[in-house]
Image (cartoon, rainbow, N blue to C red; front, side):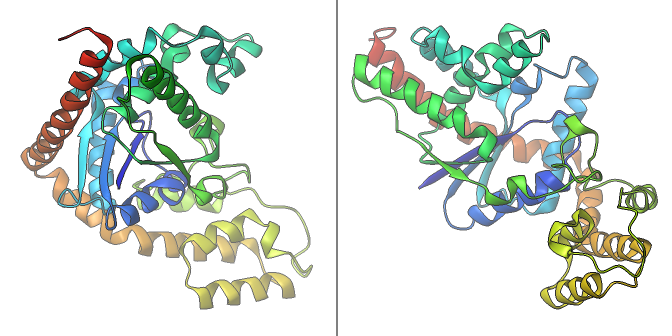
Length: 321
């Protein structure tokens, strides 16, 4: 079984990215053939600064490898290093109904709010479909909010197969259950769009200060509190052992504590959890040639597979004999 997923380098990865997706990517690489790419072409719809996009792309690769993605078990590459995907996008685009794209959430939400939306955002689901179909992916791990794109991919593959014969593997989405369960500093879902994120590799002291400023309610110290509805406790639970989680939950229910103590415990656990990855990242950042080699090898493997699929599609539709 082949697993495929991509992640955009629009900003530095945060705790929500890790627990909602990256951690599960790492787990999946041990069981299945895995292709993971840094979606820099998708990121162009929001990042309009050349140097920022280049740096974000390199940072994303370093972050993923430092967090445990293993180039010996997974194919890691940059999306734009596989030009076959953009050519495949055009083959799919020619048969994509306008109405299908108009119903896609990202474009529809912008249009409904009266915000500008370019052709890149409008056709984003077709490029995403090409990303998936180019590697004969069987399973695509996504958050609940991305499931629509898998359905679009299946619709486009089904249509192409109907008109030109069996060409594409029909992928299935795998919902990442944790993707919607990581709260931000304000209690809402952690997202760069809400400006409520905690970066994985932020400097330790500034992040500790950021954690100490996390919003909490104004209930008296002695009042018992429900840990299951408290975003500070939910963040702590991401890192703590089962025994420590139970002890903290008991503290919440008993009352008589200050949120400052919980924030300190959260900062300590987060530093300890990401400490080894932080050290590994520093070591890898000092060896840029090794990173270049890993991404180059990944792109070569990805291009080999994408070229095979593209030729299959070209012959099927009559672009090539």
